[in-house]
Image 1 (cartoon, rainbow, N blue to C red):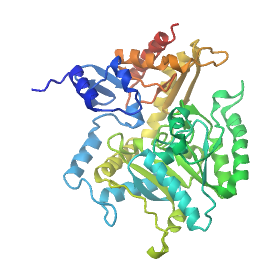
Image 2: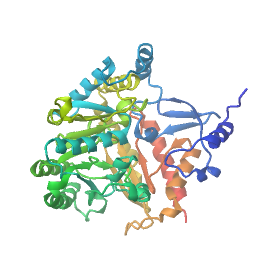
Image 3: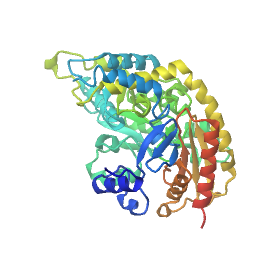
Image 4: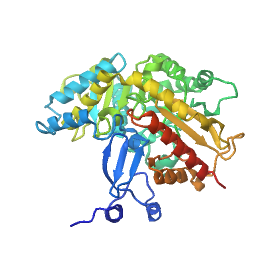
Length: 452
């Protein structure tokens, strides 16, 4: 009989696996945690320890682990169709999910193109934008504009239009050149300056860039409202409104990467709603299946679709493909996820839950090593600094955030900081008592981490 303990499984894991976004050498001193099962916001390992999943298992889980409604939908789908080629064939779950996405995304997004994950969705949008201009007889439009501190994925195209040095610098020789514009994130706003005023002021730099490069730019790509992997930096919706107007003015596409911020994370179903705008492309993934299966969708317009619609011999077709495009199981999970939103009034409940998150985190504002507590909907971030007055950061080599992570695990909470930024991004079913526990563990973890 094979022994199933944390230690035994960790040893087997480390003998054969290579984990993502991880320096594997760390696991010589930081134990790997094998998970046996999940239920609601809780994970349980093979030694019986439980962990509150405060980061929604990398921002994907919306309604808890082993959600009964999604489980039931997948069981039904599994008995009928697991997958079928999506070129020349289709199936009801893919159709139904696309219909629902057209219904709930901003007006005008009437076409759904499926991919396998967030990075792939970004690749699709980039290629589609470039290809559109080529089909329109404007081959000089080959560049993309991105924001500093942005992150859009790890495949080469997605990595190129991101701007977080930790992920990008190593691979710079492999990447296409892009145009970077300073971010509108409000961390460095002047004393007394509002988020809206600061974000509006920062837009002047984007306007200048668009004016200068419009003839050679395909699209601007942004993460609406929150630059998640970029330390959860946040900005005001006025920037999105100004950007939509400018993209129309200069004939440049707008790609909204809502992979992390979509599906209720920012207080509305999609972040773009808060500026009342429709992007030319909206990239979706992560919460799309409630955290169950890999799936992505790129939503776009009828105008975009028509630019590729012609006789085959014209060679205007968009030939991007994935073997698992439109996977039936993933699409069915997506349908079940959207049904939960529609039937249970999740967005309204989240507004109340976000207020509770703010309440339990209020004490962090006065912490001597917390520069800022910022929140957009169901995302709350606590930025640790060495000097609160000057915003001097801790040296990254000290890995203060990792100390918070280790402490929290010892107390039964899964927090995975971004550098020295501790953030709460829990499933939407978390209770007030669980939020209180989360905040207390985070407080004690920070106290432990900032000791000299």
